[in-house]
Amino acid sequence: MSLDMLDVECPYCGEVISLALDSSAGSQRYIEDCHVCCRPITVMLDVDAEGDTRVSVQSQDDV
Image 1 (cartoon, rainbow, N blue to C red):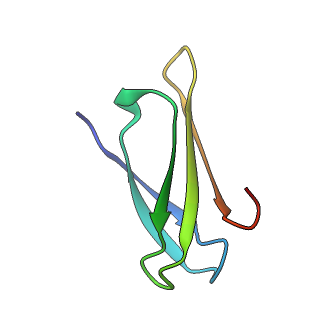
Image 2 (cartoon, helix red, strand yellow):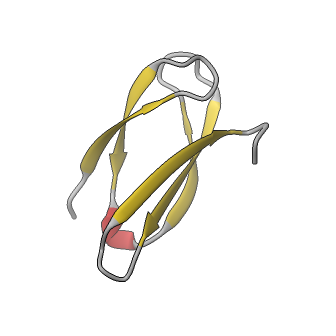
């Protein structure tokens, strides 16, 4: 298992936080709390057929 680190901006407080991503499990959607404001962030990890990843985050209000 290989974890990649990615910095993203919290959709609530705007702080930059680091997420550990495991793309070996394919596309995923999960909730992770912001390490600064503790609010729930929806993380969407998409893995295409070539293995390239795309990550986006949303607040619970936007889901």
